[in-house]
Image 1 (spheres, one colour):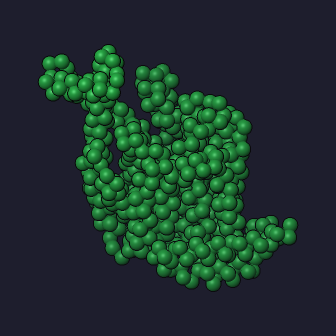
Image 2 (cartoon, one colour; image 1 turned 90 degrees about the vertical axis):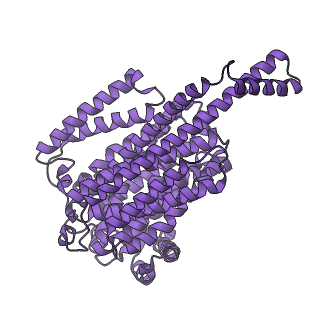
Image 3 (tube, one colour; image 1 turned 135 degrees about the vertical axis):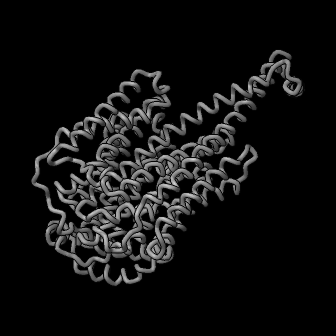
Length: 572
């Protein structure tokens, strides 16, 4: 027990390093953070801080950048886990004696539990208390990460991933709500720039980190890596995060019907999206039943929440025009972001033969662009019309996807570097002002509910994007294979010449006449498939370009933030 007294000292030292990084990233307001953190940390001891939760809640003068660092750790950890496991699935399947189809439930279980908890986070924080819920979520996520790494069988791993997803579902909206309430309206752009680093960079970093940990150590370290981050996050949340006075534990009855309907429709929809391509969508009775069930319960849920006296999800926040437009834009943004993230690795590995690690590194420029853009945009968003910054960001997103649609099979590193770097920077110009504009008119007491729905729609948009882009890529490839294959026939002079050349080549290597014919046909068909896959890739990114362009006019619907004179400011 004598070692526990060093907890605040460790936290102070880690924060000092984090603050130095923040300053390098142009977050100049944090230069005053270290003295306050040192003074505050010095006044705490482990014995006083842990059991004395109400006393900590009385503290009202914590520098908001300390709070930003505290909640950023848990947010980054949770978002990272949505993609870090992907490249480890073959290793998990081999180690636990499972098939690839069976082991994909490791991903599905996490996404389903995560999606169910997201929309009710606002209600849960009012019912249990925000700080208590945040601490419980981080503790649960950290513990379940350890259990996932130690799981001896696939069923137990899936069970622990369900727990991990349920605990992690509350982390994104809670951390965003805490940040938005900790900063004054004129500084929220900087806060969202910092928070957005985790949301945008973590999905890109996940495959790289997961591949390195799996290759260098074991797939179990993909989960164990969460332990030090989770423990530090628990310590910092305990010391520096508090419930504002207008967040009081609700005494109202629990909307059991609403929670049940929500669980069914989101769970069924998420499973359908995750398994749809694998089971060929509506040709599968299982997927058809899931979609019908999801739609039915979604309609029933909407009716229930509109008439319930104490709904688990308050839909009245959609009456705010800027918020509604922002949620729609964030949904489409999730569609484009996650759709492009899933199709580029497929293209790199299947067509260009990149290994998993090289694929992750090739996608790193997107994260680099966001790391440069997020702090910069966060600092300037309060000085310019955020709607204009948002429009420019959408234009850069369209430019990047258009550049990707111009690639061919002779692509080089820099051909991929610049479009992705531009897209990463453009996403920072979208994410920061979009969040700022959407949340500005929302009253602070409704912030938890608003951020829950905001994050839910981004995740659902991402699920739809992954499903639709994967489907389009498959269908386009089939179409172009059929079209190109029609020109490869005995009556085609170029095809006959290619066949003759390849047959002669294989004969010269020692293959017999029959085997050389088969090899020549296989080579020609391989060329057709590669060209068809390339054209499918081009068409997919043309569709994503159109999606970006169509979002630009929607910025006109949104209202310019009032810099502290709107409802959010009045809720202090």
